Length: 626
Image (cartoon, rainbow, N blue to C red):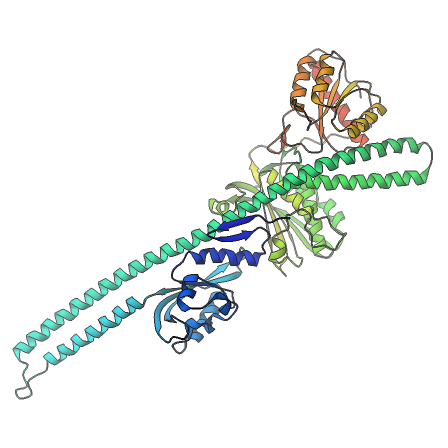
């Protein structure tokens, strides 16, 4: 997979950079913008980077000092005790403390001349609070120190003159009046000088604080800008991969439809022969089609091309309802604990996709814990602030329902965490995972206008937090309809499919169910059949069709000629023809490829029955069968 470059201030980041590489590059972007001494250290105090201005002045190159303890570099070879003070400060900063003090800096390598500097050592932590980097800044205060020393010298000289002026005459023991007047004048000069010094020090302190604030803003803005641009490019990369996988899944589903449909027709023919070996082989082949269908479904989920049927749901009740299923799937070695906050808000989401997401995350956790450990599933309310949203390119601030799945496994290092949502990325041994579980969860969450975040580090387990938007409506408690027997019918179905093999397979399956069939290779041909006056009870059309006439337009024009006709769409890849914002348009019926003979039979009867009931309500059409 090719990397997507991001260039900021002359430094290029790649989306396949490791976390450490990206930290270094982001630090470089900030350093290049600074003129005063600045550097980046690891938590042990070893040099990662120094700004070019400081290295140029010192006459050294980065590779001469990279990886070395900072206190052993040329800048700190002067006054006694500097190295010890640096070691102490780095130890404090590595524990999360910001350290500031005045010290001396050698300007050039091999030069004993010292410069007064005000040093700040700032820790930079990750989301878990672990210190990852130390930022060192040294502000030149030589001029300020020189002024302070000169002011002290002048004040000391004046004080000495005042003392001399106040000395008594050695002969009389009396202070000369002129000398006393001079001493008083000197006293006023000393006081005025002290006031001037205080005023100047206040001005210097105010200016210093202003410069420090401006420098901090510059550093923070450069770092945040680089992070935001990287996050945007990462989002664009995931979107590009999603489009690619969606297209692949479309072709894959058409192939599976041909294979699966013909295998099911063979099953019916062979079952009467009593050939057990042939039936076993067919069942194995159909299992392979089922696994392929699941793979394609995961690809579509990642690509946000899976048509969703969202309902208002309370995640607390929903997850508790999965308790028995999870215990069976995970085994006795995994302790499962579920908890929901009081007053939990509802959310609008596809419950079948939520179930798939929780199962995928739970099974991943089981594998990480090697079958023994604790899995905790929590549901709670969450308000994501403007500050949080500004740090993440793919989320809006607002109220969300949070679903957290935590395990006690070994956790993941940053270089693994970087890629967990990418399709086909897996750390499992070959043959033990497709690498699509987390990418499917990612796609579902994004398609639901949600947000997903993973927290993990080695030895600390993993927590996945899913945020789905709050829904104000009441929970939808409509029970799932019971599956009836598989039955066919005698109605006439117009099958519109551009792939010839898929078309012939579907025609054979519907004919086997007893239906009369008309068929067309594209929407224009299908409309010609409708306009010819041929009777059609159901228009069964692929969503993605070649030619100038789109499938939704075909359905609309067909209903203009045949108001009582039922319409059923099918596709392995919906694009945006009948799905908008990840959801099926109102009143649209869709059968996703690849489908089984049973699923086809039930869906056709369901669509015909609903249409016939609408016709009866208008006082037209025959009663529905089946």
